[in-house]
Image 1 (tube, helix red, strand yellow):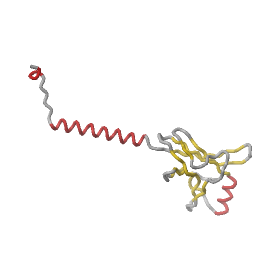
Image 2 (cartoon, helix red, strand yellow):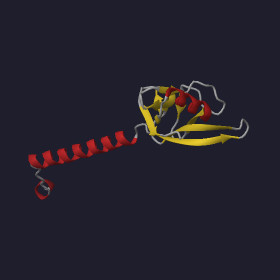
Image 3 (spheres, rainbow, N blue to C red):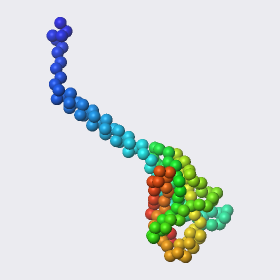
Image 4 (spheres, one colour):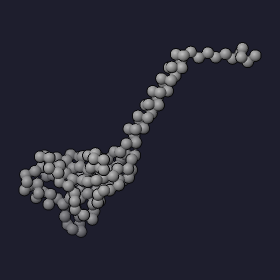
Length: 147
């Protein structure tokens, strides 16, 4: 008796449309999740004065704004002719590489301003940008001019 009262017919085209809508929605959600969960590193370049040593330093700071841990492999500057100035000093206020940068944290590398200016002046170079490189080889950069 219930078979006669409730009879539902679903056409093949309705099932196809339903499947297409669900598949498109799940693809969109997956793509959004992929974009949201990737690693993102922002750079800040600033001038700092260390009172204990009475020296001016250039600080290059990497901030992990993404949702993945990033392993930083190096930092430095690139000049207009393609030469790279790399951080190799063991400065007490700088991080040592490789450095694991967790979500929401930052790391800084400091360069002595006078030494950098002297090296640039001797070789007639101009800095284009500051950079950090991660373990996968991806380069994060920020435009910077040393005056």
